[in-house]
Image (cartoon, rainbow, N blue to C red):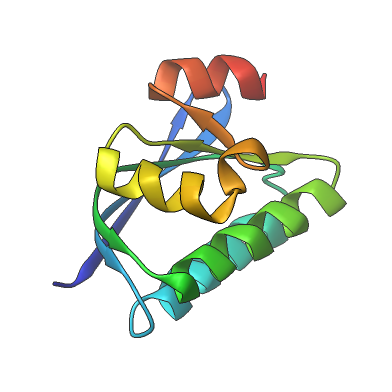
Length: 113
């Protein structure tokens, strides 16, 4: 499955909605999108993963890299995820305590502000 991404704004916070699979073949596109967002001065980004069907270790690396990038700018990368399959990946790897996970885009946007 391909990776689809759409950028929008909610209450002054950039929201990147991702749909599909984040794996070794699609993760570079997500990395590039996050780099572009950071380079344009967006330091607080909500990444909506609710339509992501699969996330591998390469994708996890992109998320951690994005988190570090935004935090180095004084901002943050907040994730929206309610899919049990994806949440389990975060729990197994211990990243659920590192990543800012939220149930809704509105909740993540509120936390970002």
